[in-house]
Image 1 (cartoon, rainbow, N blue to C red):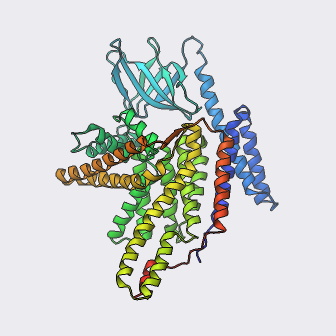
Image 2: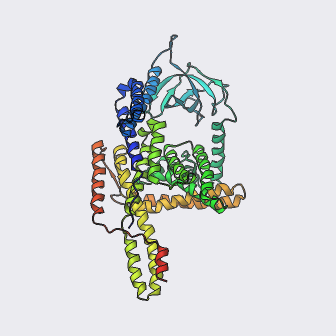
Image 3: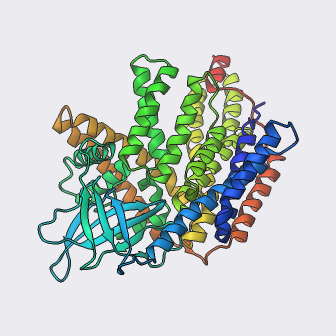
Length: 528
């Protein structure tokens, strides 16, 4: 009889305690000045727990660490807010020294003036600098250091305190370059490499700039060029996740890497040692989006188990990913994409562990086929095996899609005020198509270094997959009841949703038949 392995639960509970502490810290920003005292309390509790051998729960320490991290992050944000409202002794707007960190561009406004813009950071607050570009001054480039004086403004309708601010530099204010960029810096290199790969993804797709933009979004996370209306269709259908570099993309890249290394004859341990650095290079190329970092951390931890001769555990990898990401960057728990990615991944992991204990309809079919084959029906065995494999794949895909929907629905209802009911069915087809699109795009980029015709062939196959995804999403949106607008859910509504589903699955656990550990190969051997 198959039993679920829950040995990773202590790691999950520590991660939950850390997240709970950070949530409390961000909910009480007025006490942010106490972060140093909270950290001192954490050190004291750790000494009591380790040095004195007294009973002190690790979860309490993790909770207090979360509170300290959140309050420290809040002090940095509040200092930026306070400085941005101050005035220097000579009057005027406050002055900032900012490094150009992507999306540097120049455009002509309605009055015919050149307006420069670029992304940067102030402590842990992202900003977008917008300034008039004087005549004779070159457009800012990645890696350059600029002195800017202006006023910070939060985006309209922005609920996140860590969303990107706009730094408006008006005429007469300071906007000058202080330091040139380093041509061989890591940031400049990976941005140039990402741009070169983007052009290779678009080879042979001149007939459809939109599909080329979709291909760049799926492989490199570059959404510029995609019409907003198209993205809105995918969002309404509940399939927008295929254009956010997440677990699907990272795990597919990892699977192709490990498969290729295994084909070269490397052992599993050596393959993991080579795959992890390449995987993080890919995440660096796409700009470290939150969902991709989460997936890369989980995949790296999963593969690292092979390096130390341990059995990989997806639930332990999930818990460690939460601890690492939320520990290094506490504000990520306020990032909707990161929270949704973690919630959906946890739902899938728990579903796979829970469902592995019970007999599925495909198992019942296999058990019935064993009786039929024992009566001498050879052709029935072939048909039964074919049906078993197909039904197992379909039921497994439906189960994973259902688990992802259950885990992510409350977050979507609270933030986006929408429930995409049709996504449960359409994702069964969308996810394999997205995998095919990413795989073809990777082959297209690799083939572009050898043969242009071969690259065009693979890129067009990727475009065909994306076109089918787009058509399916449009069909789902047109179905009545596939997308339901709701009022924003409260935290209590979200908690009741999860509690209700936990109770439902606990009730099912008492009545569903357990699965016996027998593989298809063993069944074939028994019936030969």
